[in-house]
Length: 189
Ligand SMILES: [Zn+2]
Figure 1 (tube, helix red, strand yellow):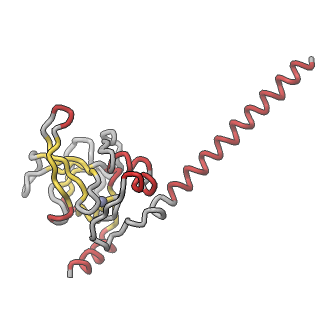
Figure 2 (spheres, helix red, strand yellow; figure 1 turned 135 degrees about the vertical axis):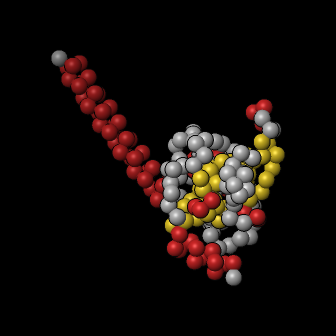
């Protein structure tokens, strides 16, 4: 009888511990998401100076999924980006450093599973590097400010450029037109 009672206490204790750790991890996740940019002091939509952080420093300031793609050249699963079919008018920025990359009017439905654009916002916003990994000859596109991996560019896009910038949505930040346009034009003039 005593043994049964002890077992019962044990079961109750374990389940309450599980409950506790579950709600704790849920809370932690929420906090990290809210604070994702607070620690990232290089993130700026107005400062165009180049960013050079060590991989260790990047790891500290970027959310895990951004770090994986931007710094480790990862690829998000196709069809998982909220931006893939978005038609909202605005500007797309590098999620790692805030550099302006694409305008929504150069975005098109490519059907490839990732947000696609036919032209970057300016010549310097993107850097091109040859990528011969995975047995393919491709051109990798990285952010012109922080050199973070964005995706690849292919020559099967629509006019006027004929290019398709195939970009991981995880490393994009989006700002709706009005504010972004105003800031961008101020910076240009
Ligand atoms: Zn960047």
